[in-house]
Amino acid sequence: MTSAPHWIRDDAALAALCERCQTLPFIALDTEFMRVDTFYPKAGLIQIGDGEKAYLVDPLCIGDWTPFAALLEDPAVVKVLHACSEDLEVLLRLTGSLPQPLYDTQLAAAYLGLAHSMGYSRLVAEVLKIDIPKDETRSDWLQRPLTPLQERYAAADVTYLVDVYHYLNARLDDQRRTWLLEDGAELVANLRRISDPWEAYRDVKLAWRLSRQQLAVLRVLCHWREVSARERDQPRNHVLRERSLWPLARFQPTDKQALARIDDMHPRTVRQDGDTLLALIAEGAATPADQWPELQAEPLPHEASSLLKTLRAIGERDAEALGMAPELMLRKKVLEALLLTGWPDGDYQLPANLRGWRRERFGQALLDHLQAQRTPPAPLEDTP
Image (cartoon, rainbow, N blue to C red):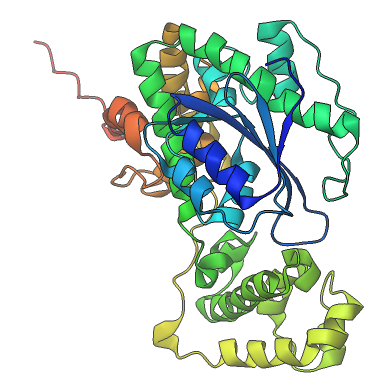
C-alpha cells in the first residue's frame, strides 16, 4: 500500500467499502481517539487497511454504522489489530459490535518468542526494519481538517500492520494460531461482560479490611460512582476520588464537615454531591444484616510468594520449550486466584479466570503440584 489514504466521509462510501472488505480474508484496523476528561473515548478516526489501500473513516461524518458492524462480526474476515483493548472500547461505543475473529499482533509476536507487550513502533522496527515517527501520537484527532502529517501517521498504522500480520502469521503454526485467536475471543468476551456497577466495590483497595456492614456502605458508594461516571461521561475520579472510597465506608460521616475531612475528598465533590453522598452512606449503613456482602478475602501473605513462584515456573518451562514469551502462560492474577481458593493448605479449586487452552494445558498440573505440597512424606519403615 503506497498510494495516498482514501477518505470515507459518508454512509454510502462506508457501506461500499464494507461490502468489498467482506470478500477479503482479513483487514487491518486501528482507531484514533481522545480521552482526556471523559469516561468514554471520543472517536476521531477509524483506519482500515485491505492490503492495497489505507482508508480513513471519519466518524464525525458517519450516521449509519450498520455495515461496519456487520463487517466486524463477519466470522470469515479476520480482524487484525495491535494492543487493541482501547480500540475495542472505541468500536463498541461507535457500533455496538466487536471484531471477530480478532488477531492481535502484539500477542502474536509474544507467541513467536518476541518481547511481551511490544509496542507497535518497536514491532514494526523489529520485523520490518522500518522506523515510524511518533510525533502525532498525542495530537488532536477531533480537529478538522487533519494535518497531512496526521493523515500519513494514521495511514501508516494500518499500512505496516498488514505487513506485520503477513510476517507473523507465516511463522505461527496451527496450534499457536488457534491459541492466539482464542485469546482474541477472550478479549472480546471480557469487554462484552459489562461490569455490574453493584460489583465495583470488589476492586477497591483494602476492601478486605472492612466489616460486612462497612462493605454494604462501600457497595452503595461504588455503584453510585460507576453509574454517575457513565451518565456524566466523566472519569470516575472526577465524580469521586478512589482514595476517598475506603475511608468513607470505614468512618461513615454524617455531616458535610466530617465529609470534607475524608482523605482525598475534593471540595467540589462536597459542594456538588455532598448531600447525595451522605444519603448514600446512610442507606448503605441501614442495609439489613442478611443483605451485607461477604467479607473480602485477605491478600496472600508474603510467605505465599515462593509457592507462587514455583507455580509460575510450570508455565515458564512450557513457554521455554515452545519458544514463547513466558508472560503468555500463567498470569499472576490467575495464580493468586488459585491460591486464594485454599490457602494455606485447603482444597484448591481451579479459578474461573483460568480458561481455555491454559486451563486444559496447565489446570491439572497446578492442582497436582498443590496436592503434592499438602501431602506429608510417608513414614520410614522400621528395619529389623
